[in-house]
Length: 212
Image (cartoon, rainbow, N blue to C red; front, side):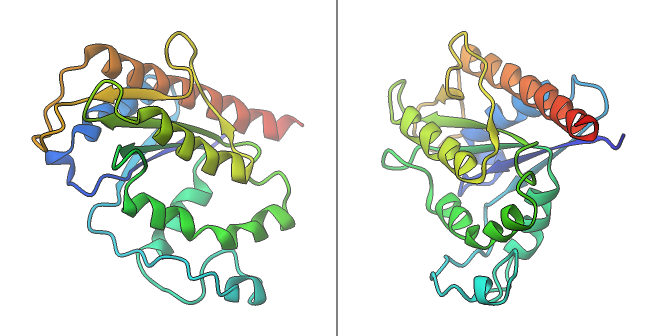
């Protein structure tokens, strides 16, 4: 069986060298890499050119699984998303919600409806999870987690949680001063646990699909 592919998507508008979110994403990558036969990739939306969906429905008229109006960095990201067995999306909290970069990324998946029509099981054997970081301990992290898990639910992707304090996803906090520093050992440990769980679940689902 091919390696299980785990894709991590950072919705931060900051590069990883200055992003507190990256600390959590890095921990999740390390957790996923503890699982054998797993391939991990991190994609940053920082400086990616992604036009927002304008709901013209041209993708539906063209019977396409991706946007046929805008050709930008989403051309590459569609393939990565569709080919992944497990997907971890992370976003800092911006005004109690996800970043504009991640919202635009979300909007471009109207066309993926075609995949579910052609193959109702296309997304059903994938696992997804969420990571967020806020500027305070209770700074809107749960709102962002819910937004991320909603995009998985929209596609029928299995939302992966860990219980034990990681009910919806891994939540961290940082000073919120833009420094990229973070001192949240429990949150970082939760990210690592979540990354490992996503890899385990995605691997099991990938194997299970071949045996159904």
